[in-house]
Length: 358
Image (cartoon, rainbow, N blue to C red):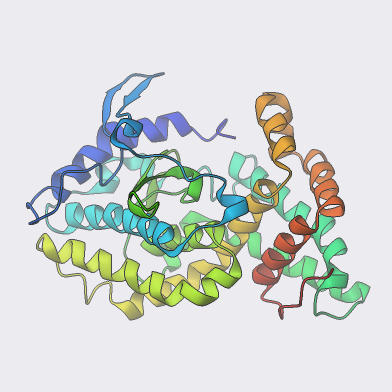
């Protein structure tokens, strides 16, 4: 998936150039009672054109979340992931606003986009065009009888048109220019559960989290990471119950982290400004989420086979015809998959929620 996106170069840039700048600003003050932890990411010890040597966080007790697609997350696990994003974003604000670091000048590639872009021929364009094809040509025709919509060909075409209209907005240049907050931070760029390591306490509750795999790091509005993580990591019922608390928690953490270190963001990034930015990026997060989840939610044995064969993996990720075959098979065979896809399509197109068909 990384081919053509300069993923290694972007990750090396983050660990060798950006992270030291952020760490310097983040550690500018000792916070009473706060232990020394990998708050912003694993340390990068050595980098060359082809090799990165990084801190092994598993030795500190961090691990990936198990089977999250099937089991989902509890509140504390999602909360800790958002707190990890708040630390990353706060460190960027401290570097820029207190320490005078021009991140765009220090790391110009943070403004170069290979993933959320509509430039023809780019990997990101191909990936998301393929995702749009799957939604329009595989999922919508199969889901229409389950949805609270008119059961007509005209309605199917209307939903397809709505879907096609959403994906051109996955354009970072446009998002940066139009964002309501006018605040840019170092954004993780690929904020979903596979890129988070957690430390759990003896009762199995997440007590700390750290972001990893900064292959899509960029300068972007903070809300994009937040919306992306929430829509990929959680089901609609979880968001209905917890969204307000999680958003308030993230915003409180961000402003607390900066305030503790001498920067007041309560005016420039107020709760109202954050919500306005969230409103703008949420439609994009919905499109990103279904693009990831119609693959992630598939049969685990099939997924393992795909990702062991590099050619099969590339075809599935880049070619609509190749991806359509397993998606159609999963949909036709598994009610669990049908229910998940129904939920994501209803969210994507903001349709009335229907009861899952038997």
